[in-house]
Amino acid sequence: MFLVLAGCLDPQRTDPVGITPDPGNPQPLPSVASVTDVMPDYDPAYFGGSRWAGSSDDTYGTRCSTRGIVLAQHALASGNAPADLDADDCQDDADFRDLYTGETVTPLTEDAEVDHVLAQADAWRMGAWRWDRERLWAFRNDQANLGATFGSVNGAKSDRPPRFARDEWVPSDPDARCAYGRIYQATAQRWQLQLP
Figure (cartoon, rainbow, N blue to C red):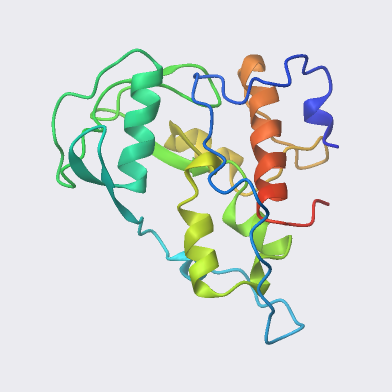
């Protein structure tokens, strides 16, 4: 159990901005056998690089990328309605509450990013290196593991897991820490990754 979860009282609260991650498939995903027993160095390209899956989204009536859907969901959960279509035909321009800081982010004027709570590189070290391309792509686009944040916060978090150690990183917003730990742990369990 992660120390970041210590003191978290509400086991039902999963996200500080009010988004309850859709568990997708409640059953554990099948394991994929590896053709090698030696972990290759991590490369974001294994997960699809900087690309996101496109998705038909009935809520907005447009075809949005996973990134656009996550930004729009966070805006709606923050009480803001997306207004304009962007280049991806997705309404992801409304202000939202940063997953980790609790501050308001304005995507059109600030560096808004979508972050993997359980980072791809961390997943790689925990066993994702044994997966096939389809499973890596599915992990990259797992909306239950994604949160909207400032680019600078995403960069500071990097791929560090939520544990108190020499290289610790935890959200600056105390209210976000429990959600961060829960999402991280639930993602590891859902994808059958070996927690350190």
